[in-house]
Image 1 (cartoon, helix red, strand yellow):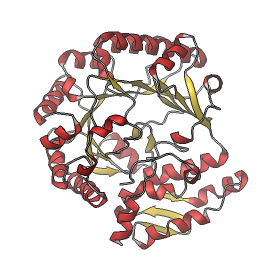
Image 2: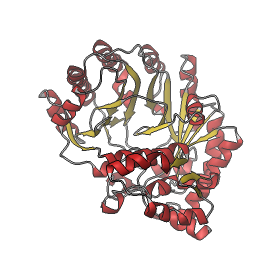
Image 3: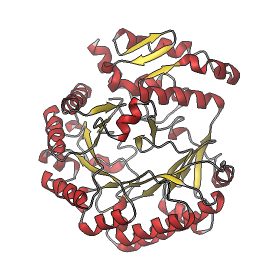
Image 4: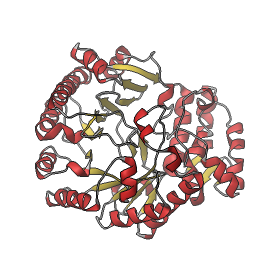
Length: 449
């Protein structure tokens, strides 16, 4: 059984932050398509926004994000102006609507600085209704957190921050090009808490060069001393064919599949021993945290920012490469900042690719989401819709899950699929059985565990 699990962990499959996944987006969905989708949103539709900032003060070797290092203010000034213009273009097609969730990602979005952050939230506030804003989150690099920035975050209503920690081991930090002693993170957390920003997430990683299972456990214990409400524990995705700067990482120093499994297990055991509740594939939270409550109540969702409580009807992505999710399908902005900026400043939406959902896509998306979020799915609830859409009976998919059943990772009773606790690390592989696009894809993905 161990050999089967090890072989499964060596498969490369998507992370399923969407279905269909981004490699299947195409140019048939463009700015005109997106504009029409925006204009057709029902009046009652609740909106969420994701703002992507593709800049960092310095680029870490492991980074898989769409970002680059900048040292001067001019590119950031220009980018902020384009973001403001994109807000205008989107508002012109939606009218003044309520925003329930707002998330800043990157890159390092705080590189915008206090004044630009205030100006951009002001631009949103002028064209949308921020009254129903439930969660306003931002991703931060602890090395660049100071009182001036934190003051701006409180001014614009941020109420959740995610700190990129990854690993506290000095040797691993050296190998990934991110020197960040514990004291730096501790100081950042203290500054945030002094300002009243108490909803804190910490991101950790396993699968890094020179990293051991004991390194992972030690990082968890140190991070726990900072009393975060949530952890995200990601497996490093080594994709140097896609992110050339990852060639700075020595392939020979990367842990193999067996060690990656041991590292993931070490993080899981340490966090659950400390009282954190496992959420889906890779998140952990205190029992009273909103994401833990949503998980217990079956209201958990998954999008491009990971697991979320966001129940918005549409997720609008702003900025270079940003992905949006509409009732009709997915859209993505131009990945090159120059191309994105030219389109927006010409008064056009910068969408260059996407995918319109078929009825079968919608059914498979719900199945994959149920597996990734709830570790369970009842195929019977899709029987009528499946017949109407020509969706298959899923006999072949259920057959594909039989090895997981034999290994005690999955139970299947009367077409009701449930993933056991032992199967949690393999959620992506289990979900992949229902991915009708995967076999036709030439995209290369990261390891499943």
